[in-house]
Image (tube, rainbow over the protein chains, first blue to last red):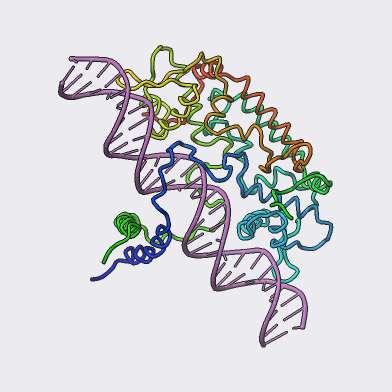
Length: 191
Length: 191
DNA sequence: ATAATTTAAGACAAAATAGGGTTAAATCTT
DNA sequence: AAGATTTAACCCTATTTTGTCTTAAATTAT
């Protein structure tokens, strides 16, 4: 009997499922709330990718040495997954916030002076500009002509966010990050 | 030969996978950016569940009739998945923002007067209070003693958000929603 | 040239949110 | 009492984000 490609594909996965589920004893039902019980915080203004990008950008800006900083070093210092961070930083490279260089002594470096890169630039590159432009309810085209009920209030909020993110540069953040009591990342306890 | 429960479980799924993958022609690889190409907007301050909850609460508050409003009606008027909305509204019921009633003429109703329910109450019930308390980078314990580099800026933003959400009540929003040009939901075009 | 190092790219797994059904329980109508 | 209606609960699928691993390409060092 001939197997379709789909069948082969699925049968190939069977072993994986077998292994994955074998040790799972039909996990007890968890109350089917909309928000179940996430293992890590998930409701946030910025995505994880964006937070990592900001942290890394601040880190690079705060390093004194000229030259490239390896992503490996950044990921270790900030306790971020290396591979995930690599992809995030690729986005910053693609929009011209970072330069990257392969090979030994390679890594990433700021493509401009740190005072010319704003928080807005970094956020826009990774999460996009929606949080600066969209209404609270996410209605397309929410504006003065056909506003949502929260339009005015939210416009006030957005305006604040916009101002803060525009006026804050990587240089400002890097300076603060170099102060003795300031933390840039959530590091595990060291002994 | 005896099959383990895991095997039975997996084999049972085989048919589903077969059906699901059969018509998918090994979908072309989409550039593995961190943000691929979501079909709907996903980076947002509030979760979809929270947005639906707010919309529904405003709708209930804006309906003149006393008595219960059925979730079916709400979901149709606001173009929201009925089952999903049901779960969201259960959360609002559990914290005492709504009352629910089963059976014919059942539905949900505000448990308090609309001017005594703030936007903050609704958001906190569904998405939690993180956006009102957490720092931009989500670092646990970010505060004056050990701030993150963006602490001061973000505190300013949070404060704005907090003020706005506290002072805005369902009554305010419902009044606006009843104005002729105001939209409460993203409705499909009607002919 | 060869080997080592480092980013880029691709494939996939895991975890979270969003969404869709079915059955149970409560309540009204007849 | 029987049937209809509506929320509650349960179970599963789909989509998106996050995380891991492998291979390719670029570059330096030997």
